[in-house]
Image (tube, rainbow, N blue to C red; front, top):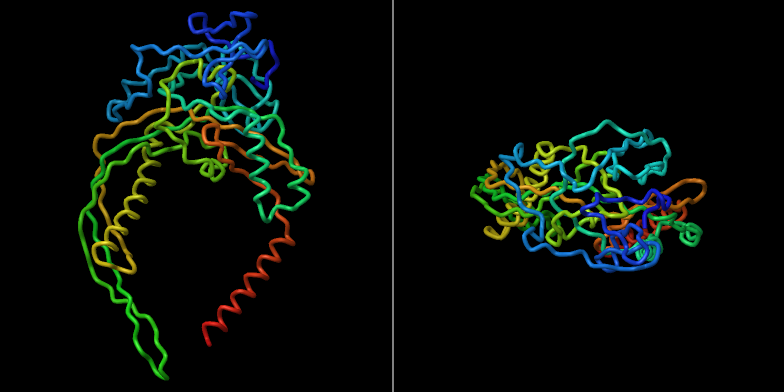
Amino acid sequence: MSFFEEPNLAKTMEETDKKCPSCGGVMDFDPATGGLSCPYCGHKESIPVEEEIPSKAEELDYESAESTENCNWGVETKTVICKACGAETIYDSLQIAAVCPFCGSNQVMEANDKNTLAPGGVVPFQITDKEASELFKKWIKRKWFCPKLAKESAKPKAFNGVYFPYWTFDTNTYADYTAEYGKNRTVKVKDGETRIVTDWYHTSGSYSTRINDELVHASTTHDQFMLLGLEPFDTENNKAYKPEYIAGFTSERYTIGLKEAWEIAKCSINNKLRNDISSQIRSEHFADQVRDIQMTAIYQDITYKYLLLPVWISNYKYNDKVYQFMVNGQTGKVSGKSPISKGRVAVAILIGIILAIIFYFFYQS
């Protein structure tokens, strides 16, 4: 159920609105069942499958993206901007947005109408808010540097379920490369001691691979490291977008467009190509090291999807400081910030120094 008051629950247009047959209330998406649930009387229904509509988000051709944009969400929407954190959130036009789901600020204002691209698919919530709370408790207990008192007192506030915007890209890649690989050998020096030297050799070649669902978060208003900690998402397990999947939840508006997202994706793909090429060189030449990889990459058959991915957001307070965390609404993976005990850090450093000294004397002997 949404964290908004009952009269302000999200409503879809009449043709997609799912009224509860028992009490007439508007039904929300239920992560526990994958269907709809009435927050008033508990009645549950499955989401109907329409055979003429694809079951998953379609791959769209990147080169013709300008002509494939679709702004029909199947529900009249409005965009609300938080003046405190800058987040832009998509709400149903009948829904009153009084609080930002990301930072809790009430400094929210409705923006002018924007042609917001409708998502092609949704990865529905599979983790409930209660399950997210239990996963958080297990997560913070494993934080070794977190003070014990913080672990005992950390209790998350009410969870906000938000769908985050992501772009995914598929492409066939081909790269020509040059590099140097090194082979280590042991040589004797004076007084019977030995040391390792590396002989370097030049190599060149090509590498090709298929990139599937390269993920790019389509917003700049959140902690990117925290969001990376939630990955991976099983994007293959998406559903073709239907308003029922986001009933009772909010959706963040993308602030990174398709073209910019592709440039971000290319940087990530290039890093993967370099790692794959390095592994290929090591395997082909039985190399110990690889350096100075220079490559020229070609991307062909580029397709994209615009997906909404599920995230539970909450926070807790310790020593008058608020710590935010997130839970992957599909897998349950937790990512967030926690207080650090200086005493525990000092103990860890001391143990590290002692182990280093022991290792040094053992190596010398």
